[in-house]
Image (cartoon, rainbow, N blue to C red; front, side):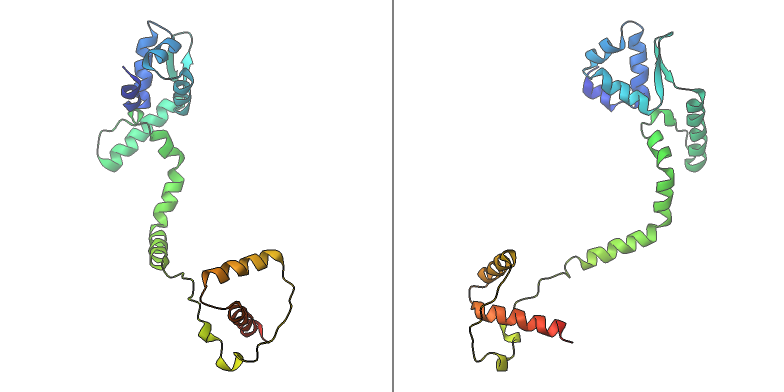
Length: 189
């Protein structure tokens, strides 16, 4: 059996396969023959709470509770699905048991979550950058140009220059006048 075929098996099938081969060899040799690192297999076995029993040279459940847990889960699945399912053959059984409460919470909040998702999808395109309208500066404010020297922080000056470069059709005096006018409207008391 090669690595690809081995990886398509459930973890319990992998354990059974290795247990058969270990009778004639070692775990390290079996893993080399398959083409997977021994540590990878060991980690998989640990996840389903199996350990290597040196006396019998086999991978076995860590304790009887693991076997009982799998048997109880079979009964629950049979009652729920009406099927004869062997959860030991399922590599996802332990994951499902660990996340059972999380899954139940998600099910309980399904309606709210779907509503949030719907609202999110509907609002994706709503956030837009408003178009610059130099005409929003009242005409009566567009007269009597004066020179003023102001001090700015350098990063602010760089940001201002970047914005100005995006609007080459406008004069800098018009853009700064509009920016100051909008500031005054927003923060006047």
